[in-house]
Image (cartoon, rainbow, N blue to C red; front, side, top):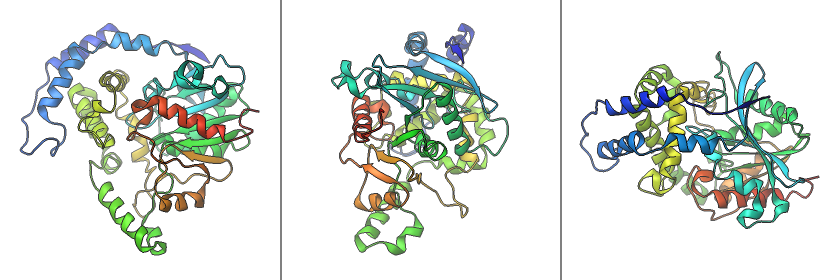
Length: 382
């Protein structure tokens, strides 16, 4: 395991600013607000701030405060953060980020997890935190061939935790991480003590409709309306990821527009993404994609059909029953009933705040919920 430090060449920063300054802006299409996607005036202002106000070097230094490493697992070079708690009995915990996100997703939650006493929680509720970059994201090597799966990532994460000397550990994630976290438990049930995800267990499918009550069927219809909104990135990146990768790697304004569109859709309770997530945090994530040329390589979960069943329908994380599971945002009784078919649910809170990327939006609450879940597992720290 080799220590790693982020050091983006100054020439790359200069190139980013020059490209943003030379953006060939298109005209605003007719329609109100965000009805045609990211509005022109909004994106121009944000791009100008990225070029002239946002300070990458300050955020690079902040990221470098976390101990980082590279190691080879299953033939791939993997980047990860490893932040040990000062508490000797802390529980090791591996956090897996989502898409279109990166390890930056967890920068605000690491402190509350590793040093809870500084954040109003008991020191006995501490964690040693491991945050790997999923292959193809950020500073982790991209899969060089087709056929890459979340199961393979899960086995890599189990190997990483073994390599770090952790015999018992927890696993957590949201979005893409919500698919990977349960697979880690399935791959390494003798060592994983529990699985916590932000949400996704128990979402119904067409196959569940015949067994629903009238009230559940009405809820299903409402879910269908909600899921039909937004840009179907799964279909786009399943069909033709390469053409999009050309554009994202050549135009930072184009990359920013795409990422802001998705963050807006994921922050569905607010008018603009930065009302939920700090603007600089969003731009740090976008900068990481730009500097590492991973907008295209991070698309593998879509073109490898990770979230699509054999009939082409969308699938949600199903989980496993070998170890206990919990969620940050549970959902309705229907969703819990369906979640318990494939999981041993021991933590299903209601009313937790936030949208999709809760570790970025409400890091203190997110950390508290992770502590609450693992606190219910009596032998998790033995």
